[in-house]
Image (cartoon, rainbow, N blue to C red):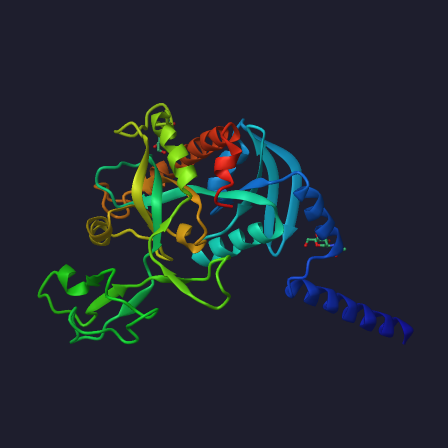
Length: 343
Ligand SMILES: *[C@@H]1O[C@H](CO)[C@@H](O)[C@H](O)[C@H]1NC(C)=O
Ligand SMILES: *[C@@H]1O[C@H](CO)[C@@H](O)[C@H](O)[C@H]1NC(C)=O
């Protein structure tokens, strides 16, 4: 009988402490580790979509792990240095929600002076090639849509159109344009919409709207000097890219929870919005961050029958790490006053 009660109580205790975690409370030992770690900050936060993109950094000779790891809310925060600059690595997982959650945790828990994001992306810009690394000045979320009913056109107002509501300012995609037969298509038009944002220095619950979000302008101008970097062009002795990859700053990139392997939509994004990298995380943060994307495929526009990402994705991840590490090196020797102007 006694044993039974004991087990019963134990069960209750375990249950309560699991609930604590589920509620997001930080336990005592984790809290102490965070406080201690913050004494060695501020850090650069590196938000990385997955292990495939993190591993080349972990094995990069210029990344020195300090062995400190803090686990919280299903995320692992790895501490280290790149050219003496303290950094925290966190794997976000795929998609914009994951990217936003990981970034928010990073900014809430730790002393962060800037956030960098790197990884592989699709490419919509016909002037760029697989393996190139792009640094975009503006990012948008391109899957916030108002889907118009069949029969309505560009001259008809959208439902809930108006101030802080939906808009016809940004533009639309007409499915009929891409039909292989007639122009009419029951899917009609989708109109691109702005994201609702709640700036940290704004009034709570007062929304602002944003479509093109700039990365930090100091980081962006600094990154222009990376354009002369040499990148890898071969995965082994026999398989090389036809074009020597380069680093280039570009006007715009875009994100959506969509893996894009379709040439028609890729062309639309480039022609309509002048977009180069296309991926699944960056706009999820809506924080002003610098962002390096190595182009791993042509987002459905290449000539090869299979997606080129398969062959050259490793090389692309490697190239994005090379550029990111060089960028941190620049930052390490860069005027701190300029950098802190945003944060
Ligand atoms: C505190 O949380 C960490 C990370 O979730 C966990 O590893 C550790 O065991 C917890 N410590 C206590 C005392 O519950
Ligand atoms: C180089 O990589 C390609 C693509 O993965 C592979 O088909 C080829 O066998 C490799 N060549 C050598 C020499 O390892």
